Image: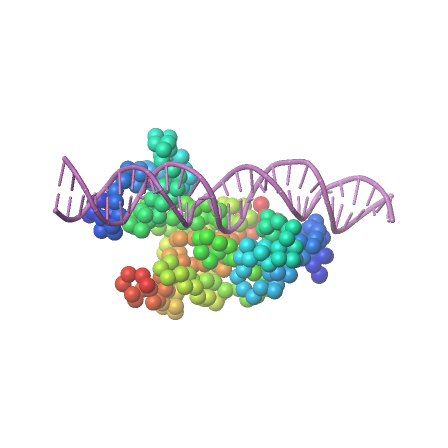
Length: 141
Length: 141
DNA sequence: AGTAGTATCGCAAGTAGTAGCAATAGCGTA
DNA sequence: TACGCTATTGCTACTACTTGCGATACTACT
């Protein structure tokens, strides 16, 4: 099923703006910000408003083509949905990030599914805490 | 150790604004918003700026007296640090929230500690996903 | 009690994103 | 190809904070 068909299946339309946002997400390797996508698109098409970018990210997310993740309390990171999912650990002391395979998080997912009937998306928000190095140093890093 | 001593130990000072914020947090039962605290304080002290409330929440958090949690992508919830910690499950389809005891999350915490040397705070961000009822109904709720 | 040093304050401007609205433009149908 | 319906757009305003700055006021010290 191609893009147009997928869009139409949800009563959505194909617009220049929409395909530019999708293209930008696909070009950028990993965890981009909406601001960055908007900036890149506006280099070639200055008339396209940032709010349109935000709305299209949301629309493409409803289509299952892109996803967003929260790595910190501030900004939202966007990426294509077809990359391998993984969790994130971010240190609240030094800000370092590390990835953790979904398999490590799966036992918790299984437990929540069994005990609460809840299907969790453990890749959606980063897990905050204190990383190995900051734990060993007495006062942060 | 009382409040003033705790403050001074970190080179912080006791101000009217600061104690009003702490008092407001202590009075409010559960998961308040900064806006709500600011609103309540400004009823009696209209000259106190919301930004002061935000800064004091942060200062009191550094002191270990209050904490914040993210229940959704939008607003931050604040509460006193001495209540029993627990995780949150929030459904992205219907928005319902449920609490989950820390004990259920502890196995994952232990695993991250062991495998990555990372001490996670699994109460900091809610776990998003799909709740039991929304899973059983085909198209959301 | 008086004073110096600096944490904290109120205010105004900035950031990341959301929402309302009239104008525009995809898309199915004629 | 033209037409109507309505999704989408650009614009502006708003939300929830955050940040910079000069003025104020806690504290420690004399």
